[in-house]
Image 1 (spheres, rainbow, N blue to C red):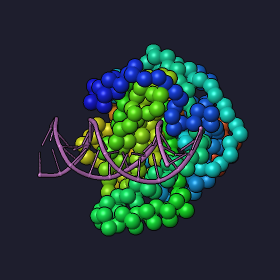
Image 2 (tube, rainbow, N blue to C red; image 1 turned 90 degrees about the vertical axis):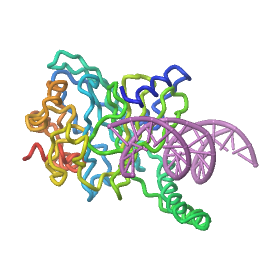
Image 3 (tube, rainbow, N blue to C red; image 1 turned 135 degrees about the vertical axis):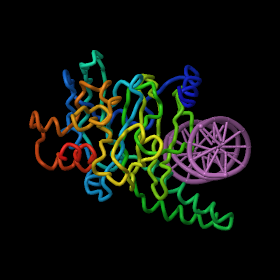
Length: 314
DNA sequence: CGGCTTTGACCAGCGC
DNA sequence: GCGCTGGTCAAAGCCG
């Protein structure tokens, strides 16, 4: 058990509960009931992805979870668009996935589209603060001015939230993260941990918090996008994955930890076992059921999660 | 010794 | 204006 897990356990039953704090539950979108092989409803996802993400030139959220096979059961991706789009739809459902390994897994997958300005403000603020701190107190006043300027330009990073049913708090996703903060969340017994990608010039952050409603669920929110391949050092040895330079061929993705296509885990036996029956690959769904309404939906998903699709198409 | 976590302090936004 | 809250910083400590 990780230190963080111990800490989280210590926080248990220390205060009252509220909602998924930063996950806008009212605006979250859930996938319909799924039985049998879990084919992810890519239609619903893609229709929620904003054009900002779609038009991203940096690729996509190139990450994939590597939860402990023994403890992690499932995870759900949701997309917290975090832009000023108006979504009038709100669906909620549960999926019951019959696992080939014998496990029955119940999950709820939501796509969140909650516009939020405070986050971006903090994002810009912190960057400004760091710049100012590097230069000493003299630049502190400049920081204020910069901050005001920055507020005029509210650049919001795309965010993707995943709800993962796992005992592991910090899921392995192939990237290296440095924890830079932990905060107690209002009305939640579980703290929220803040991580930053350790790669230089990569400002991807992620928040990890355990759902108060279901302590077995970990909510991971990624912010921004990696501008570098998955590092090959240390943890990557666990993946037996592609070389860092071979980013496009990586099998690691938000989907890949619960997708079991022959190519997805061909090199990772540990991966295959716990997710052997779960197929949530949207492309797989397209192939099997032709449920994509149009090519743009598929293309959109491809941009969001290229590592899945490159694997599929290779 | 480098990388990472911990943790109290700080700051800005927001609501009252 | 004040208090609350979320997000971040950074010093200190831990660990391999």
